[in-house]
Length: 409
Image 1 (cartoon, rainbow, N blue to C red):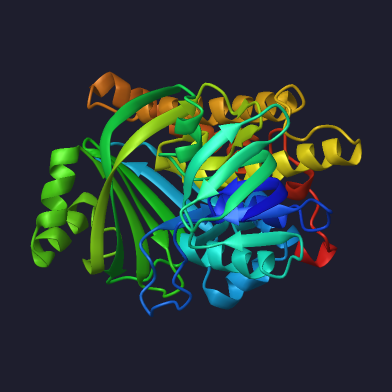
Image 2: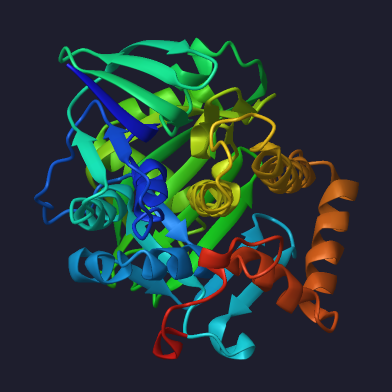
């Protein structure tokens, strides 16, 4: 059976669903193809894959109608941030109150974001969901693309959007080259109970082995950790007996929150930077991790992806309203230039940050200490850093700028 749509979104995760939700008020016919249906029921223990949502992401999700669904499920606001280096005086702190903000962001499980967006998309009469279903073939014609699915369904679309993650099938089908490098680290993620309450403070320590972040969850003594370290050490840490792991984690974190105790499972995954040479080809556009992946150092990956989704929706809707071809590479060049520039800035910043904190050279440690001290004391420097972290700077799409109601500010 053949179905014709205007846009086929391959990938029904956070970014793909955000793009579909951003087309809610249009007449565009949209298909979302996702290989796995998310588990609808949340367990008492949070999932280990979480994101630090910035203010711009919150604004996008509010404007898409999904923010209340996130709050109704589970979200943890954090009101301050502490960053320091082990065995050095390098340290900087950020406080929401000092910049007249209610918080600095929210730590939210990826599945919670996905479920809240799915709830909105399911209400849209212009969206067909193929979930679970997997793409098998894709062919690009002059005015449309053809997709076949493993359930026997066939689709034609003017535009195919690859929102299918770091190992994107859509990107591979198009033979889009990647600039990539291995960060030489793996990230361990887990839920951790701490002896002392986190007080809604996000904390990150830089050690000679790599950065370790404690992200505050809804329970005052539960944090989600992202522990970046050399791959063979990450494997050893994941394989350790629980008590041994708890001791190693407590020591690495300078016992800042007292004794740490891992709760539930631990996972490790390799950290790689990826940057697609093309975000757009004829009839195809990439968003989120399909277009770029960055170091989780500042938790900006999903924020970058949601901005991609909002930006592409803005460009596509403008083209549609002008009666232009929404799948033409030439017409989508504006989106590509816009988002490539923003992604490149973030990749460069994360790489610079990582390089700065790598190594134990005393001169480098001194520079780090002086740099962080100056950033904390120079008028306006901390505000500038915070505005970037909140996603209030840069070339933002309209969905990230204008909350629908002033009461949401």
